[in-house]
Image (cartoon, rainbow, N blue to C red; front, side, top):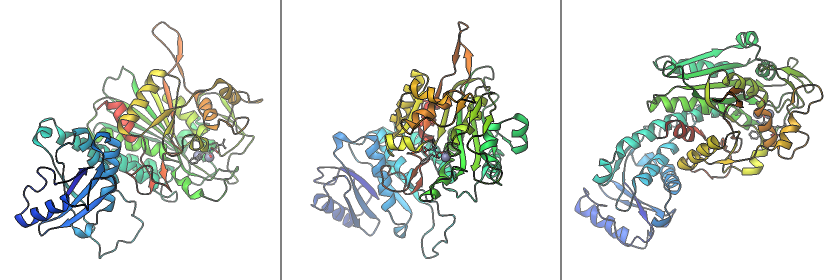
Length: 489
Ligand code: BES
Ligand code: ZN
Ligand code: ZN
């Protein structure tokens, strides 16, 4: 039994020992009143009783408790539990807990309950059962639908965990066609979901040369995967379209990367993992609206058939790209994905990409870079990020840096700027060239509302721990934020 407690604890909160026997109750109350736990953040105290082990978890000052702190505390609490003590857990929320913070605490536990251990031998001596979690709260909360809210975060978490699974998967196991196969298999028994895969032959027929150029150097050929949720709903009205960069491995290609840390580049398809995970989250929570998704899948490898620096690509849009660096490949595949998104009558387009090292310099691992041509959309994404604590920080689209990308001497755009400075903004300026225009109500042509999320810094945790809901590896970032944005729930 877990009892989260606030700082200044001098006796067991009301209701702490309800249901426990007399002996256990005395022991637990004595422990709570002792100096062994004061409720400071990070403190824990375990009290063994015959009926169950009671664990007090300090969450710190009640007056400054935020949902971020509550979620991270729940996450750390779960990470420290041992299944050797059994897998049935009860979390008992005593007085002073708001519904929002209860939900966040439990959400933290659920999100942290994740391991990517499919390639490891299981220790047969260890308890491998799933956790069984029960929450106990004041009746007032139940009347306000707390149980349904917790069920919802649980369902959204299935999407987060799916995104992590995909992004953690090594590149020899998850290549473009395998992503497509998994998407088709996932869609198979779901009535309101349609997945369509454009394989290499189809890409050639459609002239998707941006995606082809990047992917052709690998034996694992590229593909484009379409996700459609509720495709028959409101077919005449606009719907959101979410586009993901899906480089299953980014070696850099002919402009090859250094070897240090190159293993992390299996995660370069996290944008597409987020798209897939988002559709799972929307499906699992029963979202009724129509939503489109596009995953641009390719493996960026050097070979005799690879694209080269100096090549000019004739993209799906009709615009040409001068390739100056084959390691700036994400933008080349997104050029085709974004243009295609513009054909799907979008209300707005959001792309997700582990696009630049530069955004990691700017924002560290704390926030996703948010670029947009539309103030209202940008604000809504920022708000959604704040609501679920997946921060998306507004970055500018600067005309001078955009101009660097459109000043190729021989093509319409170039895939690298004129220097390193402002690299994430250069990349965003490049992508903007592939957002289509449409006529507004007074017949004026205007770009479709579009936002670009550079998740290079937030997609994975390899060192440091700014995100307690993840132990190691892929984070599943932006699934919860985009789910909130789309459902507003
Ligand atoms: N996938 C990388 C960006 C990246 C860096 C993702 C670190 C995750 C962590 C991207 O394809 C890349 O190589 N970008 C280059 C672009 C440059 C060559 C213009 C970069 O940012 O250095
Ligand atoms: Zn690259
Ligand atoms: Zn990349």
